[in-house]
Amino acid sequence: MGKSKKRWVSLLALATSATLVLGACGNNGNTPGNESANGGKKEEKPVELIWYTIGTPQKDVDRVMDEVSKYTKEKIGVTVKMNMIDWGDYTQKMQVMTASGEPMDIMFTSSWAFDYVQNARKGAFMDITDLLKEHGQGIIDTLDPAFLEGSKVDGKNYGIPANKELPAQEVWRFNKGLLDKHNLSMDGIYSLESLEPLLKQIKELEPGVAPLAVDKTFGPYLPFDYVIEAMPFAVPLDSTDYKIVNILETDEMKNTLATMHKYYKAGYIPTEAATKDSLTDLQATGKWFADKATSQPFADNLWSQSTGYPIVSTPQSEPYIYNWSVMGSLQAISANSEYPEKAMEFLNLLNTDPVLRNMVDSGIEGVHYKKVSENVMENLPESKNYDMPTFSLGNVMLNYLNPADPENKWEEFKKFNDAGKPAPLLGFNFDPTSVTTELAALSNVKEEFWTALMTGTVDPEEYLPKATDKFKAAGMDKVMAEMQKQLDEWVAANK
Image 1 (cartoon, rainbow, N blue to C red):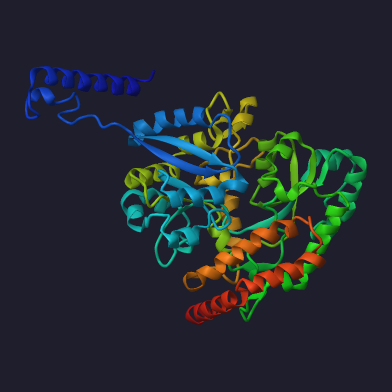
Image 2: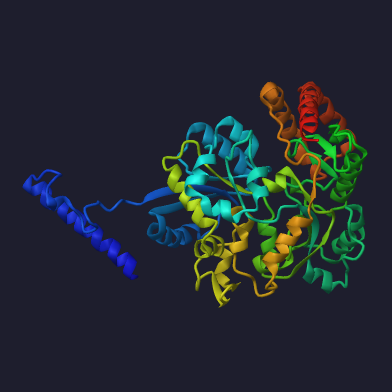
């Protein structure tokens, strides 16, 4: 037990003893005997912060949070209870819990899971604009201003973006062991169609392997900027007129879905893709060949460290800065939080303190990882019980390096951020107030068709017309007209 913890226990014991004596003697609160050993002030009991975040629930979460709580109790007087919800279930479960008033203080939100903008406008998150100034100065000093400015909703801050890559670049990832085993090459791979020769060989040579690993969250890359993620309203990346299209009616989408269905029928895509929550279990076995991911500088090293076997990647897009990449990972404070100031103090510490950030990210030193040098670590076997999604947990640039990372990794991140191209809708946030009924109906249609189409599970020639008809019947044209009106006004105001 460390000296600071001993001091905490002794003070608590003294305060308890004083209370018992006073109770027995009937003293009032103004007597000297009511003062504790810290100069007349009672030792405050630490508050517990309840944190909900995304990712496959890890076996050692409670074990790690016990260590985190020892640290944060000494630093800022809080303990932490983390609750993880799996990727495919996060949005729905968080919607139910926030609607029912489930106690929580901090929650993960993003442009693609538990929608940040929509839930900020619904009142799920606290306006933290002033809290940031009062208790989050370290965050303000640390983050690229583009993150806090780009994540404002109607001029206010409702979340703390993770300090990570600003642009999004889509890549194909490959299990390097299988590439090497069969003397295959990533050269010339860019489009979805260019994958076919490799997938065909893996299907023939490795019958127990998924040639293209796909789960229900999969969305093929297309050169469009979506008004609302995973909804069929988008603007082409090369747009000069800012006209919104129904992406399901574009040639790019039709051709891509036809290719996905072709791959599904050929057995390149797992038959359960449309219902599979995540790829975590498949990746743990190594029985996959290729998948799609969003990259960052030296991501291959991070993925390889996480899985325990080498992964390599090659681009399938240019790096663009989208609303969803700026808002790709945020921590918000619940509008119902009992301890908003303490929640902000914790988030400030998480984003500025390397000890806390690495504990939350990598677990307990000597158990889940070991330090190789001052800022370099490597995973230990127990890390399999605490494998966290790094991007979702705050300032990634505080993380220790992996042995394969270059010393200038975080400098390269900054260069990558500076090189990103702004997507056409960057800074535009659609206000759905006037079409909420129609959007709810459209969401129901999306639930019926989207995943089955995107994973290649159904024939797009049959199901795309059905989906389009149902989207139109649910109010697609009205929603698109309102989106276009707001976008035209935004373009005129920001030219």
